[in-house]
Image 1 (tube, rainbow, N blue to C red):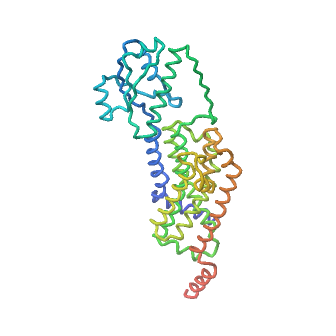
Image 2: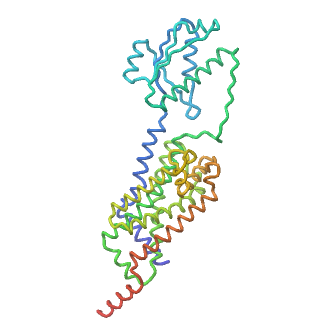
Image 3: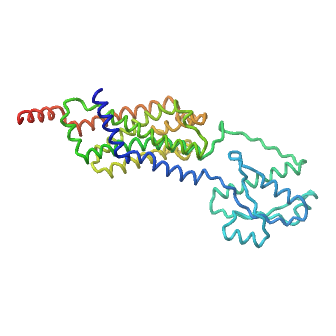
Amino acid sequence: MSLFIQELKKLLVLTKADPKSLAAGIIAPTIILVIFALTFGNFVALKLAVVDDDAGNLGTAFQETVFSQTSPLSGEPYFEAIEADADEAARLYEQGRVNGILTIPEDFSERLTSGASAQIFYAFDNYNTDMAKNLRLYLDEGIFAFYQSHMPGMEIEVQREYAVGAQLDWFAIIAVGVFMLAFLMGSMFNFLYLLNKERVYATLSEYRLAPVSLLPTFAARIVVALLAGALGAGVNALLILLLTGVNLANCLLAILPVLLVLGVAFISFAAIVSLTVRKFSGAAMLSMVTAVVAWFLSGATTSVKYATGVLLDVALALPSSYGLSQIRAAVFSVDQSVGGLLAAGKGWLVMGAYAIVLATVAWFVYRKRLGGGAPMRYALLRRLRTRA
């Protein structure tokens, strides 16, 4: 226990003296979080140029109905109206300043009041398939709402059933995944960086002279790495609270065990890489890229249930898939097990197996690289005593 405490103090002092070991858990995930916030978290109403040539009143009512439709998640309107005549609308469209043109013809009210079919003209650029889909669906909602309000005689019934327990904001789902990534990257990089600094300072050779087991020093390195990961995750949790309103602290008791088990597994992998690949840049690159790739394959941006074939097999083989599923389930109070594929019981078995196996392999590699074996230590001690 004394050796563990002394090693822990040394590593904490080294971390304090050179805080770059904390950078990976803060800078990289924060950049990822900001990028996703700008990409998925910034809901902006689509701009439509409106050309209302209708001679009656229903054209205005139709326009008001379409532009009053709002997103059920954000409460923001789908569309923003830009009043324009036909020529100005075409110019704005060509300049890319509006997403589409909605034209209400002159006989719109006349045809509807007479019981005939009315038409509108809708032009939009479909170079982006997702945006084109939104432009179509959002307008359909407005048309349906208009008929409900102004054509009560029409027998239209829509029954809406949700296949999920709740609708969640996409960016909030991704942000929770970034929180886990921050913890893993921060933990792994701290282990890599501190071990490399001791190589630079040439203090690792002293471990070969230790007449006792190095297991307490290995455990201390894992503990310090976990603390570094917790710091990086904490910074990102605060950003997530500011950006999404999701308070991860409320679910800390459920999240913490998952992070600890995943942390041990990923830190152990980083330890194996660091002790095998002598060059720090190569070890850091391999470890960080592996963490990010595993994160993406675990359902970082889209649910594992949409994966098929080899991708699904890989996702189900990764411990991070189960960890991310359990963290999201705790945060959003929604079953994220994908119909049992990522069930909690199975998840703990997979995560625990990875942690035990990787930690065991990492310890053996650590002892081999730094310990030098008991015979060598005793031989060196005998030589020193003889010379003395």
